[in-house]
Length: 373
Image 1: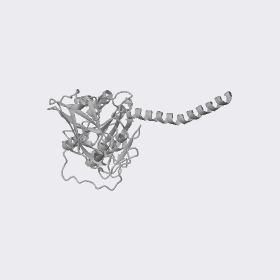
Image 2: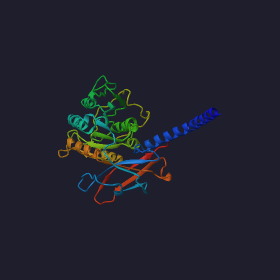
Image 3: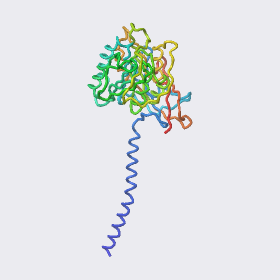
Image 4: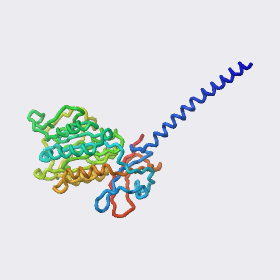
């Protein structure tokens, strides 16, 4: 009887253990889920909105000692409670360098190459940050895909050249002077385009940045005049906002070419694969009744995206601008909030972030898009 009792008790314990195993597994999985949720949210979604901000005093110096209580935040005019706040310089950085290589830039490309090499070598942290390089003229070409390998990036910078006239090109157009290579692809739009600025922003944001997490920024070197893009300025900015990407615009114009001149040869060009996948053809071309103001366009791009506008001059050299960029990218605030159900509708929402103290300027994006899950 004693032996039988022990056997029955043993079976009962085994049954109880089997019942507890699924419960324990569920508790373990729930604990793992909670651990994952403790990380600060980065991607824009209905439950959390995040924005990067830089604050400057009246002298233009970066302010680094603010707290959450120093900020006020509104979405579509309604006050929001800031639920996440950090002085983030440690989040991974994804950087995209977009260089205008149209003929209007031929006199300044050497300076761009030298300064860009120094900047990337200084700003990218080993095994933490990544960058890619795109050049645009009458096509948009990915010279180097996302990588943390500095040597690959520096080698790609050395390949920045203005397009070379080629009689053999279909329609008597031009070629970019570089083809093939690691991580490279092109996205050409024919019909005489000469400086595909908007297309380059759209493709960099939609095809590269949108897939990344953490801090994201595009740096554009150009005279600011678009000629021939399929995408509009509005579509390019929308793509950047949807990708949660800041855009820093550097106006670097060849004075001999004339400020705001488009440059570039006409003629069709068949781009290769890699940067393709944009919207289909059939978009009407915009006529240029008057020459656009490249400076105003770049100022608009920078302000809307939350970036900053720079203009190269004798006083503000490209090296100095890159040093300012390096400082800013490593001294940003990250703020987050959760919009209420009524405020979490799909579409565009306007943001207004301010500092309570006087004589301080906040640099951040104007708004964001919520997308349906």
